[in-house]
Image (cartoon, rainbow over the protein chains, first blue to last red):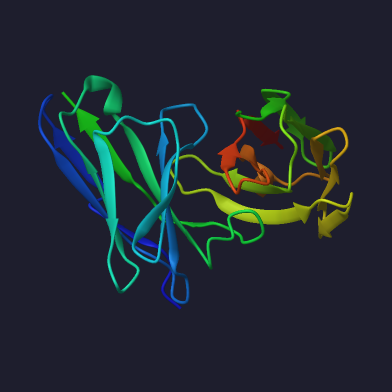
Amino acid sequence: DAGVTQSPTHLIKTRGQQVTLRCSPKSGHDTVSWYQQALGQGPQFIFQYYEEEERQRGNFPDRFSGHQFPNYSSELNVNALLLGDSALYLCASSWRLGTGTSPLHFGNGTRLTVT
Amino acid sequence: QQPVQSPQAVILREGEDAVINCSSSKALYSVHWYRQKHGEAPVFLMILLKGGEQKGHEKISASFNEKKQQSSLYLTASQLSYSGTYFCGTANTGNQFYFGTGTSLTVIP
Protein backbone atom coordinates (compact mmCIF):
# COMPACT_ATOMS: atom_id res chain seq x y z
CA ASP A 1 0.00 0.00 0.00
CA ALA A 2 1.74 3.13 -1.25
CA GLY A 3 1.88 5.94 1.25
CA VAL A 4 2.08 9.65 0.49
CA THR A 5 4.96 10.46 -1.82
CA GLN A 6 6.47 13.89 -2.39
CA SER A 7 9.01 15.15 -4.85
CA PRO A 8 11.60 16.46 -4.89
CA THR A 9 13.03 15.78 -1.43
CA HIS A 10 15.30 18.81 -1.48
CA LEU A 11 15.34 21.97 -3.53
CA ILE A 12 17.50 25.09 -3.59
CA LYS A 13 16.15 28.21 -5.27
CA THR A 14 17.08 31.85 -5.54
CA ARG A 15 14.92 34.74 -4.33
CA GLY A 16 12.37 35.75 -6.95
CA GLN A 17 12.24 32.35 -8.61
CA GLN A 18 9.25 30.06 -8.80
CA VAL A 19 8.98 26.51 -7.51
CA THR A 20 6.61 23.56 -7.98
CA LEU A 21 6.32 20.77 -5.44
CA ARG A 22 4.46 17.55 -6.13
CA CYS A 23 2.48 15.11 -4.02
CA SER A 24 0.78 11.78 -4.62
CA PRO A 25 -1.72 10.85 -1.93
CA LYS A 26 -1.99 7.55 -0.14
CA SER A 27 -3.93 4.94 -2.09
CA GLY A 28 -7.65 5.38 -1.46
CA HIS A 29 -7.37 9.01 -0.38
CA ASP A 30 -8.92 11.84 -2.35
CA THR A 31 -8.08 14.94 -0.30
CA VAL A 32 -4.70 16.65 -0.20
CA SER A 33 -3.58 19.32 2.23
CA TRP A 34 -0.33 21.26 2.16
CA TYR A 35 1.58 22.51 5.17
CA GLN A 36 4.62 24.67 5.69
CA GLN A 37 6.86 23.76 8.62
CA ALA A 38 9.62 26.14 9.62
CA LEU A 39 12.46 24.79 11.72
CA GLY A 40 11.32 24.13 15.28
CA GLN A 41 7.71 25.07 14.54
CA GLY A 42 4.49 23.19 14.03
CA PRO A 43 3.08 22.68 10.53
CA GLN A 44 1.14 25.70 9.25
CA PHE A 45 -1.85 24.99 7.02
CA ILE A 46 -1.54 26.39 3.49
CA PHE A 47 -4.57 24.95 1.67
CA GLN A 48 -6.59 21.86 1.00
CA TYR A 49 -7.79 20.34 -2.27
CA TYR A 50 -10.72 18.06 -2.87
CA GLU A 51 -12.41 17.21 -6.17
CA GLU A 52 -9.83 19.39 -7.94
CA GLU A 53 -10.92 22.51 -6.07
CA GLU A 54 -9.33 24.49 -3.29
CA ARG A 55 -11.65 24.00 -0.33
CA GLN A 56 -9.87 25.65 2.56
CA ARG A 57 -7.02 28.12 2.75
CA GLY A 58 -4.80 29.22 5.56
CA ASN A 59 -3.21 32.59 6.05
CA PHE A 60 -0.83 32.48 3.10
CA PRO A 61 -0.46 35.05 0.29
CA ASP A 62 -1.58 34.50 -3.28
CA ARG A 63 2.01 33.66 -4.21
CA PHE A 64 1.09 30.22 -2.93
CA SER A 65 -1.17 28.38 -5.32
CA GLY A 66 -2.04 24.81 -6.00
CA HIS A 67 -3.71 22.33 -8.19
CA GLN A 68 -5.24 18.89 -7.87
CA PHE A 69 -5.42 16.49 -10.77
CA PRO A 70 -8.10 13.90 -11.61
CA ASN A 71 -5.88 11.15 -10.13
CA TYR A 72 -5.92 13.11 -6.81
CA SER A 73 -2.26 14.07 -7.00
CA SER A 74 -1.47 17.67 -6.26
CA GLU A 75 1.03 20.44 -6.89
CA LEU A 76 2.04 23.38 -4.75
CA ASN A 77 3.40 26.40 -6.61
CA VAL A 78 5.17 29.29 -4.96
CA ASN A 79 5.98 32.40 -7.00
CA ALA A 80 8.40 35.22 -6.30
CA LEU A 81 10.23 33.25 -3.63
CA LEU A 82 11.33 35.03 -0.48
CA LEU A 83 14.00 33.99 1.98
CA GLY A 84 11.22 33.39 4.50
CA ASP A 85 9.74 30.70 2.29
CA SER A 86 12.59 28.40 3.28
CA ALA A 87 10.93 25.53 5.13
CA LEU A 88 9.86 21.92 5.00
CA TYR A 89 6.72 21.58 2.89
CA LEU A 90 4.54 18.69 3.91
CA CYS A 91 1.74 17.11 1.96
CA ALA A 92 -0.94 15.22 3.84
CA SER A 93 -3.72 13.11 2.41
CA SER A 94 -7.02 12.07 3.87
CA TRP A 95 -10.38 10.81 2.78
CA ARG A 96 -13.39 12.87 1.78
CA LEU A 97 -12.40 16.24 3.19
CA GLY A 98 -12.71 14.84 6.65
CA THR A 99 -9.83 16.65 8.24
CA GLY A 100 -11.82 16.67 11.44
CA THR A 101 -12.55 12.99 11.61
CA SER A 102 -10.03 11.43 9.26
CA PRO A 103 -6.36 10.89 10.12
CA LEU A 104 -3.84 12.83 8.08
CA HIS A 105 -1.16 10.75 6.41
CA PHE A 106 1.96 12.76 5.70
CA GLY A 107 4.65 12.47 3.09
CA ASN A 108 8.30 12.93 4.06
CA GLY A 109 8.23 16.49 2.79
CA THR A 110 10.23 18.70 0.47
CA ARG A 111 12.97 20.77 2.06
CA LEU A 112 13.03 24.12 0.22
CA THR A 113 15.96 26.46 0.71
CA VAL A 114 15.77 29.96 -0.75
CA THR A 115 19.08 31.81 -1.08
CA GLN B 1 -6.25 30.07 16.10
CA GLN B 2 -3.23 27.87 16.72
CA PRO B 3 -3.74 25.69 19.78
CA VAL B 4 -1.25 26.16 22.57
CA GLN B 5 0.58 23.16 24.01
CA SER B 6 2.27 22.75 27.34
CA PRO B 7 4.90 22.05 28.34
CA GLN B 8 7.10 23.19 25.46
CA ALA B 9 9.68 20.55 26.30
CA VAL B 10 10.07 17.67 28.73
CA ILE B 11 12.84 15.22 29.53
CA LEU B 12 11.97 11.85 31.03
CA ARG B 13 13.82 8.77 32.14
CA GLU B 14 12.66 5.46 30.73
CA GLY B 15 9.64 4.21 32.64
CA GLU B 16 8.44 7.64 33.76
CA ASP B 17 5.08 9.13 32.84
CA ALA B 18 4.27 12.39 31.06
CA VAL B 19 1.24 14.51 30.26
CA ILE B 20 1.04 16.91 27.31
CA ASN B 21 -1.76 19.46 27.21
CA CYS B 22 -3.39 21.17 24.26
CA SER B 23 -5.66 24.18 24.63
CA SER B 24 -7.69 26.07 22.04
CA SER B 25 -9.51 29.39 22.12
CA LYS B 26 -12.05 28.09 19.61
CA ALA B 27 -14.85 25.57 19.96
CA LEU B 28 -13.54 22.23 18.78
CA TYR B 29 -15.05 19.38 16.82
CA SER B 30 -12.15 17.01 17.18
CA VAL B 31 -8.57 16.74 18.34
CA HIS B 32 -5.77 14.79 16.66
CA TRP B 33 -2.41 13.82 18.11
CA TYR B 34 0.73 13.30 16.02
CA ARG B 35 4.35 12.50 16.80
CA GLN B 36 7.20 13.74 14.66
CA LYS B 37 10.72 12.44 14.97
CA HIS B 38 13.62 14.57 13.83
CA GLY B 39 13.85 14.70 10.06
CA GLU B 40 10.71 12.63 9.58
CA ALA B 41 7.07 13.30 8.76
CA PRO B 42 4.44 13.54 11.52
CA VAL B 43 2.83 10.21 12.31
CA PHE B 44 -0.79 9.92 13.35
CA LEU B 45 -1.44 8.67 16.90
CA MET B 46 -5.16 9.11 17.51
CA ILE B 47 -8.29 11.19 16.97
CA LEU B 48 -10.77 12.19 19.63
CA LEU B 49 -14.20 13.47 18.71
CA LYS B 50 -16.31 15.80 20.82
CA GLY B 51 -18.19 13.98 23.52
CA GLY B 52 -15.43 13.82 26.07
CA GLU B 53 -14.15 10.48 24.94
CA GLN B 54 -10.90 9.00 25.99
CA LYS B 55 -8.81 6.81 23.77
CA GLY B 56 -5.82 4.66 24.32
CA HIS B 57 -3.25 2.72 22.42
CA GLU B 58 -1.01 0.55 24.54
CA LYS B 59 0.68 2.99 26.91
CA ILE B 60 -0.43 6.18 25.15
CA SER B 61 -3.89 7.56 25.80
CA ALA B 62 -5.68 10.86 25.47
CA SER B 63 -8.73 12.72 26.67
CA PHE B 64 -10.80 15.52 25.16
CA ASN B 65 -12.85 18.00 27.17
CA GLU B 66 -14.88 19.91 24.61
CA LYS B 67 -16.34 22.31 27.17
CA LYS B 68 -12.88 23.44 28.19
CA GLN B 69 -11.62 23.13 24.61
CA GLN B 70 -8.71 21.11 25.90
CA SER B 71 -7.10 17.77 25.27
CA SER B 72 -4.39 15.90 27.11
CA LEU B 73 -2.05 13.16 25.92
CA TYR B 74 -0.86 10.68 28.54
CA LEU B 75 2.30 8.65 28.06
CA THR B 76 2.89 6.00 30.69
CA ALA B 77 6.03 3.96 31.34
CA SER B 78 7.81 5.88 28.61
CA GLN B 79 10.17 4.11 26.23
CA LEU B 80 13.13 5.49 24.28
CA SER B 81 11.01 5.22 21.12
CA TYR B 82 8.58 7.82 22.50
CA SER B 83 11.11 10.60 21.93
CA GLY B 84 10.03 13.18 19.40
CA THR B 85 7.89 16.26 19.05
CA TYR B 86 4.21 15.83 19.78
CA PHE B 87 1.63 17.98 18.05
CA CYS B 88 -2.04 18.24 18.70
CA GLY B 89 -4.22 19.21 15.80
CA THR B 90 -7.64 20.74 16.26
CA ALA B 91 -10.60 20.90 13.92
CA ASN B 92 -13.41 23.37 14.45
CA THR B 93 -16.94 23.20 13.09
CA GLY B 94 -15.80 25.13 10.01
CA ASN B 95 -13.60 22.15 9.12
CA GLN B 96 -10.48 24.26 9.62
CA PHE B 97 -7.56 22.34 11.03
CA TYR B 98 -4.63 23.79 12.95
CA PHE B 99 -1.59 22.18 14.51
CA GLY B 100 -0.50 23.13 17.98
CA THR B 101 2.75 24.73 19.04
CA GLY B 102 4.40 21.37 19.73
CA THR B 103 5.98 19.64 22.73
CA SER B 104 9.46 18.19 22.52
CA LEU B 105 9.73 14.95 24.47
CA THR B 106 13.09 13.34 25.18
CA VAL B 107 13.34 9.97 26.90
CA ILE B 108 16.75 9.09 28.30
CA PRO B 109 17.97 5.71 29.59
